[in-house]
Image (cartoon, rainbow, N blue to C red; front, side):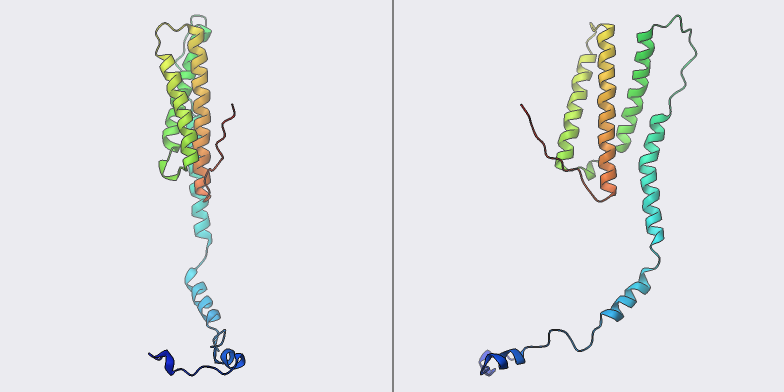
Length: 182
């Protein structure tokens, strides 16, 4: 390219100016040769898809297996135990399983701002329930209702975190619009 632009003669007409432009496409097309070389290097794609499928199965099935596995309950006299106590024991066990599952599925690296806000709301609800459960003067029926509410909230939170994880595995993210209706 010349250093001084004034040394380039100006075209006399538009036709000459357009004729002086370089061609739109080079004389030889190198794309077919490049594509063939890339395809030769790539190899089969099925191992990648198989690895992704196996990872998804482990990410979804393993937590579900942990959720299904119930600890063996000791044999007790059913007449001696009251219904609320055995129901409370079931809620204790389910709450412990859900807490373990929540710890396994929660991943702060894949959270969006909306997802973190919704998870924060559910965490705050759990904290409120836990604070109410610490009251020693709580009646048995109230304690049972609070444990039921705690397990329901944990189920919602585990489901939400699992959905977040699944969406992240799909290359998506949770971006729901937050709306407050008064």
